[in-house]
Amino acid sequence: MHFRTPLLALLAALAIALPAQAAEPAKALAAGAQVERSALDEYASAAEQLADEALSYLGIRYRFGGTSPATGLDCSGLVLNVFRNAVGLDLPRTAREMADLGDKIGKHDLQPGDLVFFNTMRRTFSHVGIYLGDGKFVHAPSSGGRVRVENIATAYWAKRFNGARRLVDEDALGISTQLVSAR
Image (cartoon, rainbow, N blue to C red; front, top):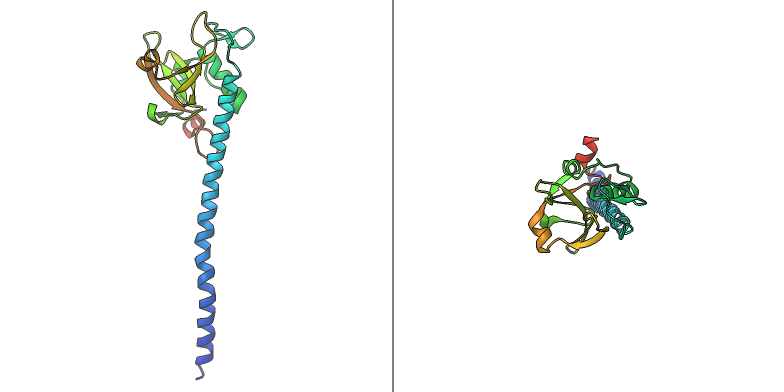
């Protein structure tokens, strides 16, 4: 009888404590889901900024070596302007150098904001554009052309597709970890 009261008190304390401890993992899972949702929201926001910025250059004339919207852009000039103005990321000058950055992804994994590369001059990574989604990409095509949107599945582009890179990723920073380590 002497131990009965403390034993009952101990059992009562355990009964109260167990539901509280069971709630802790649920709180941790909810916090983890919130962080994951936040990273996805951040990625979606960066991708949207890239697409909006890229589309703001539609109609700008092509100029070989061009890096200014006022005087004309070539393909890599368009991409470096878009990334600088949309997400504050300075990229190398040429399509070939850009192809060394970020995470390599397959054509079936393309998401808005990804860089798409083409072999248009009988050498790999000689042309670059920005994927917009739904099979469309924006680019500065060639001499006499203007910045425009095209379908990646058309015969010309499908035949010349070289690969894709993701520079903006779903991680918490919004920038590909490989890209950060390369800087």
